[in-house]
Amino acid sequence: MSTPGEDPRNTPPEPEPRASDILGQALGSAARRAGLDPSAERSTGHVVWHAMGGWRGVAESVLPGLVFVVAYTLTIDRDTGEANLPLSLGLSVGLALVFTLLRLLQRTPPSAALGGLIATAAAAALALLTGRGEDNFVPGFITNAAYGTALLVSALIGWSLIGLAAGYLMGEGTAWRRDRRKRRVFFWLALAWAALFYARLAVQLPLYFAGDVATLGTLKLVMGLPLFAPLIAVTWLAARALYIRKPQ
Image (cartoon, rainbow, N blue to C red; front, side, top):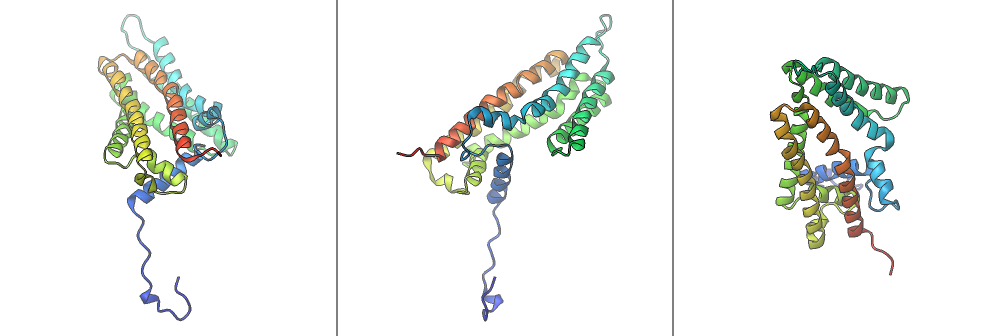
């Protein structure tokens, strides 16, 4: 804004936000909504539980996939080896729809359940289109590959996505890149998250190509929240150690 008597034409334009600023702000905001604020005086267990969405978040994340695996396994014909794919997918999508409707009726933020519904419906549509139960997991493979690659590349080029999120969450922007200790910690955290996503692919893709739907679905559940939760805890504790200093 120009002062009285100042020619607006001589006022230098405000600098355009950099891509790192925009991405960092988005990641930091997402982390804050998930309860991952290192400055908050909360226990590690509370933070992890909040990040998973509590009982409702766990149910919305786990139950549609669990219902699919159970229904698929129980409907396998002993003679043909074929399962009732439409029924299994219908139950999974139907449950995801119920979770979304409950959030809408209770006027709670439906974003998590809605995202799960869209992902579940898209995966089911692909599986129904091909007639192959294992194709229900293809969108998950794509997501894991994308997240893992983004985190790996960000670490290797010195712009860790974990660092960007923490930097804007703590109000220092990209200043963490001038601190060797922070750069090193955020580098390894990004690699750890990338390793999680790639580990899922390494374990699950062979089962996909083998057409072992029941085992694939079971391992997807096992490698979901049970691995996500401890890595969230490690990430939060590491970020908290970097930014929160105890009084002498």
